[in-house]
Length: 101
Image 1 (cartoon, rainbow, N blue to C red):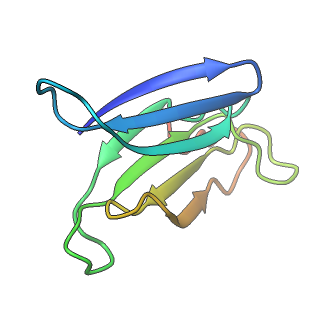
Image 2 (image 1 turned 90 degrees about the horizontal axis):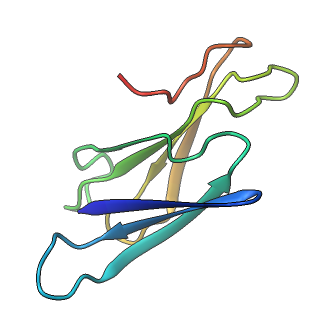
């Protein structure tokens, strides 16, 4: 799976593509806030929900969490259908959760 990040004014579109072959196919399109730096980090993880498909994480390290500036967030998406499974949020201002390793 390969990803392509395209930023447009207030939103980021993350396209997850099949491996490089003759013709690539868009597997999933997920959207997030440009201001939160959605898609700054992306990672594929194992099968967390038992459906036989590995899930993927998308970081937004500059996302605000309520009144906490740049607490950051990480979203877990299904590797089967691209649906959002969970959102994890930083607990303090400046945590920048989702920045990557």
